[in-house]
Length: 232
View: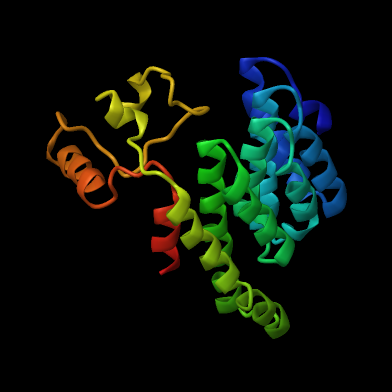
């Protein structure tokens, strides 16, 4: 399975992702977590991407706690891409704990990459939503109560981030291009996704999205506002 995770070549993408999913399903969660974490720090982005799929699958299977500590450590990696994947994977898999909230909050406060901060904000929102889902599913009362005590920390981190971040147009609005036609410019950070945006010259739906981005969100690129809306 580890060999499959690092299989080379474009045509091996299904092999890599299948191996990641199969690793996530093995009985020994700690062994799976170690193998997928190794993939997350691989030199190749396609391996890191596949490993992220596997970690998300561990979270969906209720095994996220096994990989949370490793992911928290990886949020301090010297490699921007590793920090990006670690933040995203925490959002997809991690339980609501002090260490997880602290790691993502530290990224919001000190991370130079807009893209990584965006993933961190989204991750905090997802972890909170998932905690409420566990409450509805009948998780142990002690676990739910300990998580609920952390909600003010999460909300404070997100609100503080909104106070620090400077609104800026995402690249699709800056350049008046569709997202797939955008040119990497001096403000681009990794592979930017569109925020609440649209195209001024598009159809009625795109025009409404464009006006909404400018008038309501000030064309905010970051996911912090979206996370706060999800929480509320």
